[in-house]
Amino acid sequence: MKPESVSVATGLYGHIRLGYVLVESSMLDAWQRFAAEGLGLHVDTPQAGVLALRVDEHQRRLVVHRGSAEDVTAVGWQLDDEAMLGLALTRLRTAGVAVREQSGEAAALRGVERFWSFEGPKHMAFELFTQPLPGIGPLQTKASGFVTGSAGMGHLAITTREPEALLAFLQRAFDARVSDFIEERVNGVVMDITFLRLNERHHSLALAATRGRRMDPLRNRIHHLNLQVASFDDVVSAYRRLREMGYAMANGIGQHPNDRELSFYVTTPSGFAIEFGWNPLVVTEEAEAGWQPSTYQGISLWGHFPESLTLAMKLGQVARGLASIARKEYTPGVAA
Image 1 (cartoon, rainbow, N blue to C red):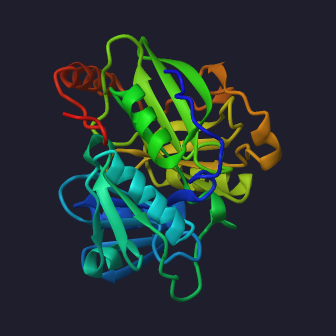
Image 2: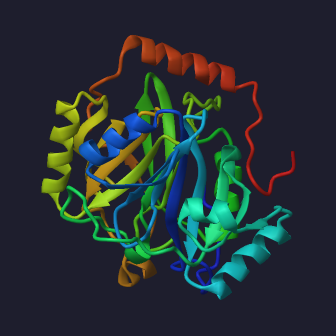
């Protein structure tokens, strides 16, 4: 998957970041225990059927609300200001993407004043906003801190059967830039992973695709959501808590070769993973000028060993992958 040529002139790059993630689940009690006691996030329960998870001054970063999907249903992208929002909306509408402005209860659920929504990859809602609502009361987390700010709350990794189309859309709409590539063998299948940055964070999105015959082995729309903590002690403490509480570790502690982040992956009650990490590489303005994407062999320098993968899980992934071949995958801006 080769990057489309894009201009480095000022656009949305550096002015857009991951703002929030919306999850629909019927297992709110399980999510509350997982988030508060395991991950150590601040959990508010503003109303029946809603968990609002905080890691910084934003009122809501990860929102879990009652429903049957057991999946991520919406992803919010924060723009710096109205000018950047206007640029994004113009690009989307020019590409033929229908965008709806929303406010009221839908915005309150997300912890924002208002937002603009369109159908994103794999039928996730992609949402744009500028004004997050501030959290009320002191932040209470088990970590010493979470790294957010101008780089956003972390990153998403998505499996896709249409990587070229999705990459092209993200470059045209959001000025995404390719940081690097990883080739990884999973259950005998080669995965090509493209890492995309929207700001100084090494990647806000990672797109994973099977080489050759394109398959999607996952039930969930995303593979994982990354949260970055302030110290390696925060990573180790959360790992120990979650292990002691009996949560399935998708991957133990390890280090990636490209962004050098030290992290582990834990399976959420809804089935996708959360990567809990520390100290990834930052693409500074100085580094930006001479940045050249590299290709790495293998997802980890060391560690990240699967700790909970069973034969039944492997067979399930193979079955879902084969079944996915017959389905058309939705990518915004691409004619059906």
